[in-house]
Length: 192
Image 1: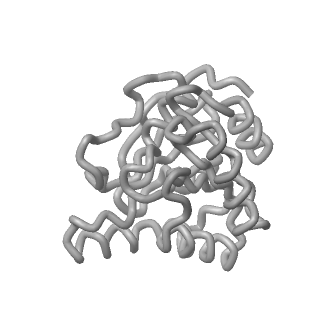
Image 2 (image 1 turned 90 degrees about the horizontal axis):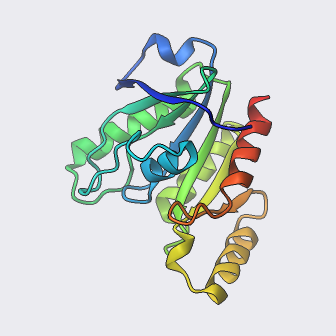
Image 3 (image 1 turned 60 degrees about the vertical axis):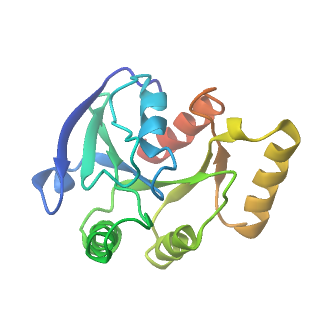
């Protein structure tokens, strides 16, 4: 699959008709400042499609982008940002959990974006537990591979695969477009 078109449709903070219009959804989840928006921009080859913020935790809604006029990329708020108030962290957590557990969306794939240098955080581990308990299809994208030296890259990916043997892990670098084709290919396999 080639991504030929990508356009912002709308930002959503709760129930909305876009959630249940039948189009496949690829949801990008991860902690704040892990590079979700940059990853979306890299995959679509549109530099300013999804807005990444210099101040982590700024996104407070689900942003929907129509891809190839047939499915959505959904950019979620980052979770686990310590400087948010307790109420804001709770609101964001509830929105993400509602989408994963209680909404009627079944036609989807979740991309769990992690910083490969940091590895899986406790928040990420909680997400994986939710995916398994609710039978949600997902892929872990180990982002920011360009921040590791050559010898570290393979070691870190092997460690992730050993720690979570039932999870598909794809290394990625938005800067270098590292493994971009493989990630698009895997996303495509869920859509078709």
